[in-house]
Length: 356
Length: 118
Image (tube, helix red, strand yellow):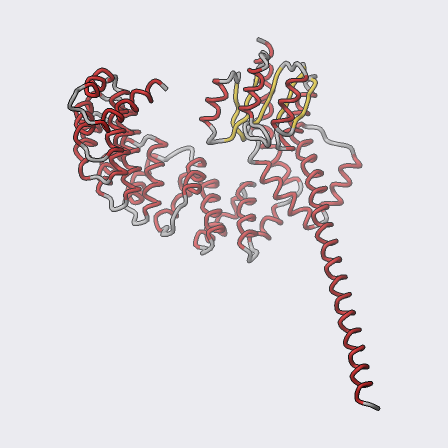
């Protein structure tokens, strides 16, 4: 056997092997694409079937036997049940009243609780979060201990959903986690939680004071928003004390809250603390004065307009003076010969804003 | 009565449609704002129910189109939480009523009855 013929023979073999591998790869890719297409197509068809079922339930028509049989057949598939559960949770957020009750009824009629429990015990964060959401939506109180344990999960998706679920189940009492919560509470999460609390029990003072003293700024800010929502006047002195807080964002929220639950001392307190505050807080104070429309702040505002070195403060002060009806005073200042150009422009801008 | 529903959520659209048909109304469905504006130009509706946020044109643009064409038709706006400012704009443009999602379809029917009985 000569050397070149061996090489040629092996080369042909190698080419055949490569071709077979390429063919296998093509078959695999085609197979996978077909599988993905089937899943997508199924999900689309299933979504239509499920939404039709939900719509039928809401409007109170039972559908025909054939449709019901077909629906029952689909229900035997686990992925159909998971999609059904997802769509039900989503639909529950679109309707209220009798429609919402009808949707809730579907959870139990089709025994979707087991599916939700299974998801709660999965490893992947999005599945666990989905399970929490579904159990809370179905109001399965037996899930509270397991969901409560998820408050300590390190994954934001899981602990945020657990926080929301606890508040959905227990209302204000569900906020207990705030006492030891050391991660940032996002603005979105704060709004979700706030929108789910409809009542504050009478004996809530101790907890609210604890949260106001939290080392977690986002917990303090959330508490201030809670106080604003429920106009909890009793906390006014504690909020005033927050004007010395290290975080500017907390001070800004404290100003907003003081304005929301203002009393006869509020404007005076704003004026007293003004000089010690950073620019963001000063601007917030001026915004609050604009809302309060108190004549008590008039002299203070005139002083800021004339003497404050910051242009943004001058602009805000001029705008509040316009709201207080001091247009004539502003016109006089702008017409004086010793008034500098920048101030004239600021006053013109404020008067113009009023016209707009 | 001929009612236009402009809503991009299929479930809401179908549910409201069924409720209204059950009440004996004739219903035209549109899934985006542009389509709704075209229908408004084409037909004379007795009432319009529109979502605020929709593809191609918003509920506010639908209200503007109604005003531009001088059509006197009551409009119920469906909004989501946090869209209060847009709702104020909608009233400035002539909206007759609004409902915040999640909403009750039964209540929507009552409001439609109230508006069309005037």
